[in-house]
Image (cartoon, each protein chain N blue to C red):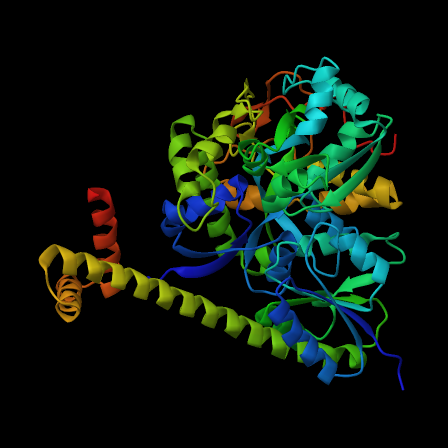
Length: 388
Length: 194
């Protein structure tokens, strides 16, 4: 039997790992798939590749498909078949800003988002220019959510991740929120200090999704199922602590991330070097590929994104939440991953932000443990009552 | 006659930029500006308020232009991505040529098409030039390495240049490798022995 060829696009980041592992370690081959991976130079380029039919599926920023269905980003319509990665972003500041924060007595604990916000506002003197990779991204959402309550004028600028360190060094931005390894790259180049992991703002945020053109998975159910299973098994492999050093070697191989394995491994192990002076901080849950139903596309996650976007763009909240939740295809996830052995949660929506310790919930096979998912401000998002 | 369109080409390389600008001038009497993709790109484009922006699809700074599509409220969006326009074959040709176009909403497609046709043709030329340049560089690098390897052999074995090249070629044939690869291995080993 000849393998069916599927073309996949990605942006070279640690969270593209599930696609690379599915291809390189044979999970796709087991499903009779030959994956052809193409690296995209930017998120717009990747979006156009998927929209224009140059690839069948792609790693995608979780808010982008939601923004499309709210009419905020172009004519193309994508949907999320599964979540590829949870967390994985870091927030960092320039050396100058870090020095002012230290003078103010801040200890850079790399954990407490509220304390970091206060210290940042005190040092920023009224306004902050912060770089993010793309307007519709979890980076943008985390930065806005984190700093919305502070008295600070935010100037959020788009900076391509490989240029984030350079932009910080050139004084074009004061801070950034970017996916690993690019935060650690800024530290390595001696131009930035890491302030927080994204997980300090929202402990379990859907960062990237496996996206296809809307309707593709239903038109090609056989192929979609094989792709979803291959990527899910890759996620399960990535979730095992024993595989971390092999993962970092794999991502550091020629033609992939162009960053050393040692730097990549920091986010995978949670052993972060936060400053050019070499200060270390441990941060559990820096990036998650499998545990805690990480790959399940919760409709409540999509609704949260939809409501955040609606609030900023003056859209009707109830309509936005309803449209958004349909973009995360938990129905297709159940359909195609049940036979692969995925433990499927009993519900497709949950209270986002409600768990401050790991909690067992009902699943199809009994019980599954959901991890901590709290927001730094202890707010709880109830997808059933978005208008309250 | 329709008023000339204002076009911005984002391209750092001067030679490539001139090539594209020449092509666009042939497509009509338009105002063409060239900008490098520095950090102030979004602001400088917004200041110019162009009808059309052309950028290499491979340029990571493309994401910066996405901000322009969101510049005002979603109800009055000034800029659309060309990939969204209805003309499927033109869109595909643009993607293949590696050009991304951002077009002010409401600009008629018969005004855009000749410009994009010209841009697509020129971006194809730019791509070819890039491949040729890479090939030339590689060939030059290989020749340099082969020359160094020949020199090493000539000194070590007291033989002439032709004999040294003959040894390299024979080793390459015996091992089923390229002469340049054998030369590279020899140069690297010789460096280690220094």
